[in-house]
Every structure is written in structure tokens, then in C-alpha cells.
Length: 159
Image 1 (cartoon, rainbow, N blue to C red):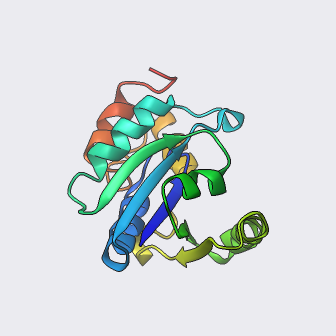
Image 2: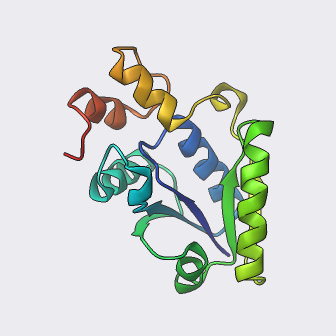
């Protein structure tokens, strides 16, 4: 069974890595789908986000990283996926994720959504918070893989 874990991954965090590792134990193939999503004005271009995700997940078996810019359910079908993985860090995530899951179900009733929670140590880690801490000179090394911390220390804006 192939599952898709979509997101902007701007940047990928240790929480994301934890969720991918959990999914890889449950499913035959996990595709980490890095969304173009220019609407969010990402800190890193899609090629950088894909490269960081690939490096961060290189030790996790059965995982592939791909970029996409189309409708998620169309991407899932193109990859012969059967489910979408979504992470829930806190109750506050649930309402938005529930809305997305129901919309995806309406668009593609044959594709399920599976919610996973990260390990408690990552339950508060969000890419936006990591970037804010980094921009203010804080230490982000416990929140992101080493390659991400190194890349952020070099600067962000799409380079």
C-alpha cells in the first residue's frame, strides 16, 4: 500500500521525520509529497525543500520524496496511492485537518486520510516556529535534522 504524506516542509522538522518513520512501519511505501504552494510564500524554493527532505529521510526505508503542484488527490492517484497521511500535533490542528480530510473524501471517496501523532517531544514543533526562532538567533538544532540546521544557518530566502 502506498501512502502520501503531503506538506510544504518549509523546512522539514524532526516531527515530520518522526511521522514519516511511523508511517513507514505501517505501510509498504511512503511518498513525502513536497507542495510547491507559492501561496504560502515559502522560505525555500521547492528544489531546496525536496533536497532537504531527501537528506533528512535517507535513513528511513521505503520512503520517496517528490514535489507536486497539482491537486493533492490527483497526485495521490498518479502515484497509485490509497491514503493520505496527516499529522496532528495538538487539538488545535484537528479542525483544519478534519476539514481537509472531508474535502479530499468528497473529491476522491476512494482515498482515505490517516491521522498520526508525533512523539510527545515533537508535539509543539512547527516549521514556522523553527524559522522564527532561527531568524531571532535561537538554537534550532533540537527541532530539525542537522542538514536543515546547517542550511538555515546559511540563510533562507530561496537560495
